[in-house]
Length: 259
Image (cartoon, rainbow, N blue to C red; front, side):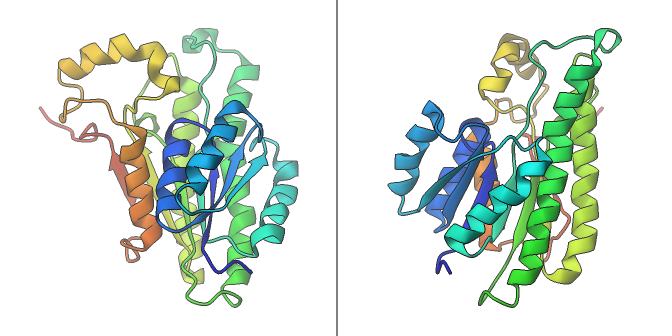
């Protein structure tokens, strides 16, 4: 069994997932990095960056929407390390073409919910079962599960109804998992980013640059993947052990309601 703690990060190859991978590697975690393609250019460049921080890097190719492949992926991680200490459910997508809700198609809707909601829920279920078993096997074990949601969990976006629904439902899933797993010593948290500067948000950059300048975000700047990663690292360290089920807003104050 690994003497170092092990973190699984989904959607690890770029953006927020990449920053989380490097942050947890810096915290002493070995990394099981899940992405749809394990040998992509992004994953190949992430491995040496992670190993430079003293962590072991294990790339796992998995589309989280394919829940029938979850068991195989988790088994491969356990065969390699013998433990899982942290699961960060970060993988998420937006539709390639953002359409008004009156033009939304079922295929795109189903795909977004499969990746953003169904996949994370059933991956968390699988990992939670393993964590409960591992409590008796690992000394000083402090398991945690984190769900990366979005400010779209509580914000209407008429050209992204599928994303809004998936993130709102994932937010509730985080609460239900926290309610159920706290008795088993597993802390579950929701991390809710605001506008984070990633490849996914580049299509709306100029629109949101203007809105930020007009006061959309009280702190008047885009968030960065590193802002989110610092929150994940703090939770993984155990800084918030008495805060199970808490929603951590990483949004520059977008959640503030003012008149």
